[in-house]
Image 1 (cartoon, rainbow, N blue to C red):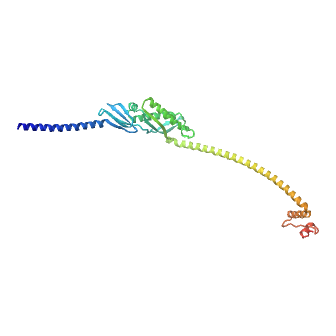
Image 2 (cartoon, rainbow, N blue to C red):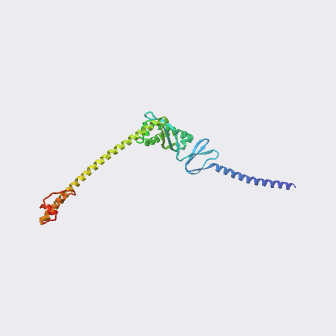
Image 3 (cartoon, one colour):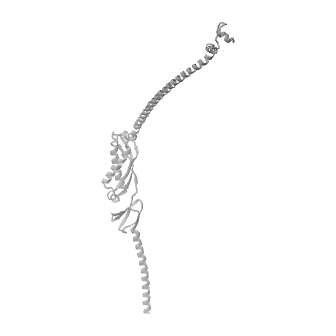
Length: 308
């Protein structure tokens, strides 16, 4: 009886040991899986993964792929690696000639050194705030060196080169303070006038455009008159030359005709006299002409049909 009880107890203990081993195995597996998934992370294209240990940055991953960290001790955060667009707040500035305008800019920027950015700006929002302050400061300084007309007049504006100058100077300030970000480009979206100045400025702009248009019209009229005068001169030269050539040809023709007439008439003088008489009739006799001539006149004989 005692042996059976002892054997039953041994059997129960062995079963508990077996279940305990299985439980420990699954527990260990779960712990390993938890540790594995807590230590692995994925770095995507276009982002930085910042690894922190007790709040301090210990590593930054920038290449896409799988990376590892110490579970429960280190944690990760994400920063954008791509270029970003930031709309700078509208600002009112004074020009060189003490006039006010409203400037609206935007900036294209990116994070070059995440560690410096975190160390000095802490967050992306703070970095954008500092960047905006620098952009406003530089734009105000640069436009403050230009007169009002140079900014609003397209023909006198230097705004194209101004964008590059602003970008360069803003990057100098960001590099000086080691914010770890770079401005790719700063552009002016809109240049407006304070409401109280709009009417006077629009009137001036209209006047300038009308003056410019009148200059173009005057230049066009002058060019037209010059072209017409040159054309008239050439036409007169061409006509004069043509008339001279025609007179010369006409003279040669008349001379040749007279020569032919002389040769023809010299062969029959009586026919020549008749021809001359008829030509004279053509010139002096009209529809209402009345001629009184003697009956024995050569004209009368010819009119009456006597040609002998």
